[in-house]
Length: 205
Image 1 (tube, rainbow, N blue to C red):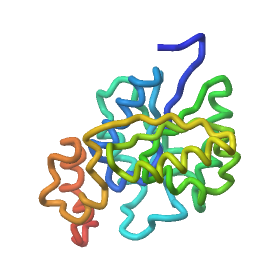
Image 2 (cartoon, rainbow, N blue to C red):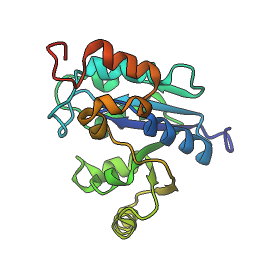
Image 3 (cartoon, rainbow, N blue to C red):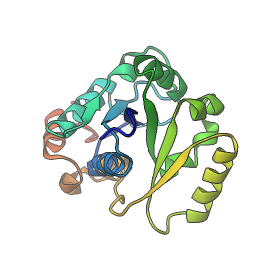
């Protein structure tokens, strides 16, 4: 659904280490709540943080491709995977702005990521390039999240809260307890994890 001729593009970035069902839930909820025409999944290549235990970027890209197969409106980009050196969100957003000059960009994040935004490179430029859809769950650091959103708005940021249930899944949980997590990832991703021995400590990792 387009509103007044405006194309709305959602961007869901992250290490996806691995991608799991909560990522898909966030993307669907944001699409429905804000009339997004498309949600683009952006696996990071060489992030400035979260290096420990990070599966190879081609593995993470392939798992996202498998996870979104058959999901209308979902797409995946290898933009950050192909980039050399450390990847920063501000650089990615500038590329996306060039590709979709007339679109409104909405970066979809969890509340935990919102609390980290002030540490992002060129945060004021990031806030000028996109709005944020912040997926929160009841009771999780609500005061801290609201305070952070207020401070970002004071700097010109557009912050849209999206209150959700069922987000109690993390990639860390999956990496640390792989044998108990089959229900937390799409079936095709589970098969890929098993096939390639990812996060298992096997020589095939």
